Structures are given as C-alpha cells and as structure tokens.
Image 1 (spheres, rainbow, N blue to C red):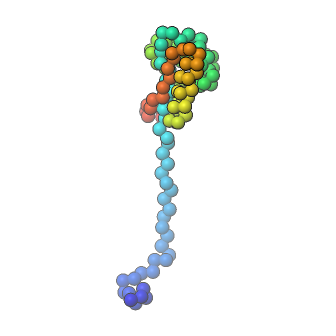
Image 2: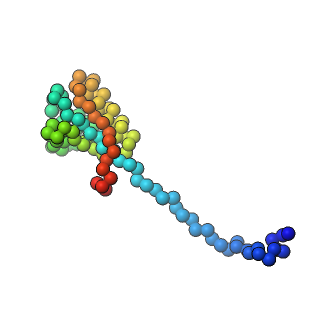
Length: 113
C-alpha cells in the first residue's frame, strides 16, 4: 500500500519542528583554601597569596589574618580544574620553601551566586 492509497496518511511536510537549544549549566565552583599551621611565617603567606591569587597586599594580609585566626581562609573561587591546579601549585611551592603550609580545593557554597 502506498502513502497516497492509505486513508490515514497525512502530509505533514509543512510542519516545523521547534528547535530547542541545549540547556547549559554553570560549572560547579571550588574554593581554594589555605590551612593554618604554627610554622609558616605570615609574610610568606601574604607573598604567596599575592603571587598565586593576584591579590593586593592589603587583601592578601586580610586573608592571611583570617587564616591565622580562624584556621583557614579562602584565597579564590574557580572551576574545579583550576582550583585543584592552584592548590597543588601552592602546596608544592610551600614545600619547596620548607614550609608545611597546606592548600586544598573544596566545593564552594552555591548560595553565594
């Protein structure tokens, strides 16, 4: 049976399918956190924050004081790959300079958007 002979066949060649664009989501963000220790000099921490996170001297000092008083401080918020890389670079740099300073990446709070 051909289409022309089928009584149920309808010509829908003028029907237009709606193109739905893909839904893009923002990537999950991670914060790079420096953890306090009793051995790393404060000046080293300030210089490290300036060098790796491009903060001003004043901003870096504020972050360092937060690390010192609260045990940890956020240096920046990035996508996962960048945050993990920065954390690894900072930890390695501290070790290369014989300091036990530790840096880690952790998921950022989503309610900060």
